[in-house]
Length: 384
Image (tube, rainbow, N blue to C red):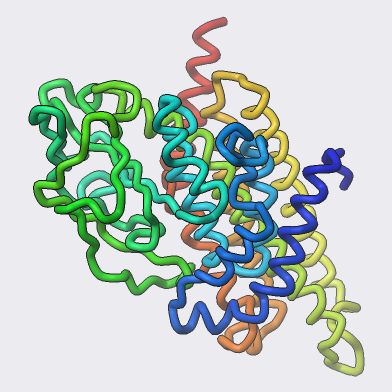
């Protein structure tokens, strides 16, 4: 379908697609098998000026928004959902600074992210704070001109590879979620270390580690917004980055569909290509329809967010839920179409099916997203 992208958006999409086809596809299976972080791909993205598509021009970016970021994520994920996370995870870690950082903070951190010199990460999840983000135990205690951080963040994308971390910690336990604050923490800060590299089912080319804070002292100028705004920082950030997860899911689904369609034309059974069998045709038709529906929803949600509309939780959750469910369905069907070959690691759809699963889990499980959607619907009804 025609989505009426402007000239710059078309160029961004085409460039990301070119990198996906020429640089990512040839190494995707190897990086997945060995758990290799895509440092070389990040350099290619940096040299192509794609790292800063969502960052303001005054801070070295291209001045785009969520839509431009999602276009890149979609195309990269079509080749590898894990490799794309070096870019997408950096976006997640950067948006708290974009949304809530002051000029000095933006001037210090955004240019290096925009040019691809530094990656970012977002530290919210803990062992007892997953779907219940209000269960955060990491503390930040004021001490003179510094805050002292203690605690552990779990399952952090880009952990150990990123240079800049936006971290949510508790500054006033008595206030509950209103006692959380957001901080910028640099990688080499004393008292800040990392846990082991997690051995995951999918997205294995993305690094996931614990963030460990042991009397980690950071200057008070690294506080984002003000004390007590941490929960708001986290929620507003996730509302804007969930379409990025949706775009990752969309790209994975598109890649799996392309592999299945190609295979159906090449695989001959009973003297005919299996694409001539109605059972396969119906599967392909459903896959293509579901992918296009997801793309429509994601693109419209991104444009809605970039327009400056304040209420975006419902649409953001919808795009993430729908696209990730589509990704799981499409990749499963792709494996089915390839049959025994689809189950083998030498064919990419097996990996795509594993990669798709996480999109239903992180940045808010799909069950939690359905809660968000329902609450927004009920809230809107009460206003009438």
